[in-house]
Amino acid sequence: MFESKETATAIKDRIQLPFSFDIPKMLAETKALALEEFEYYKVIQLRAPAHLVDTTLPFPPPADDYADGSWTNWLETAALLKSPYIKSIIDTFQKNTTVTLVRLLRLAPNSIVKEHTDPTLGLEVEKSVIRLTIPILNNDKMVFNLNKTPVNMKPGECWYLRLTDPHEVINNGNEERINLTIDMIPNKWIRDIIEKSQ
Image 1: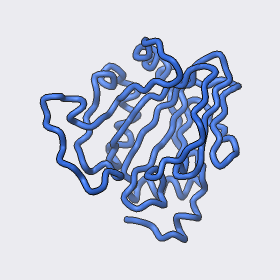
Image 2: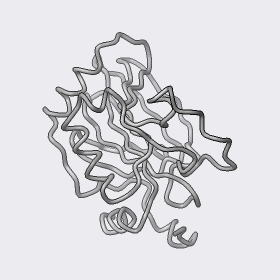
Image 3: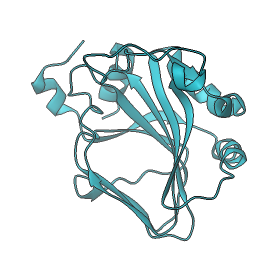
Image 4: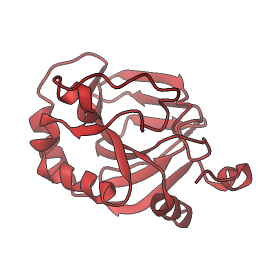
């Protein structure tokens, strides 16, 4: 159910949620997948639209609105099936709400993701998904700015960020940054967790 504007604006732009995950296990599984050399930015899909995972499936019909993820079925990729601990993290959420897109986001050393907004990634948007971020690999020269101020996310933590607001990532370190992002259709379960965690 979509919340009123008054309720939505009461939600902070960054909220650490009461989940924590095993950093060495996540990092080991991620390193096993993250073998490909890349420049700037690399995405490893863990859950994706069904027709991209199983190419024998037809493309879904055109949708009027792609924002909430209901336009397709979402399947686990081969990469996720090789990662039992990360899969257990996703299953934690999947048993309580509808998980859509899940990815490992790799940002190369000395790289920047310029300030931008994601118009459908916030609780305040009707028919949207929200994104939870779990840092896996960080360094002390990496900054995630949201609304011009840093979000101090540490590996193993889980955060809700209102990504409809301006945000940027600056990695001035000599090591890549890797985050696990889990998109989901917000329901009462996750909304209550977010609101109680403020």
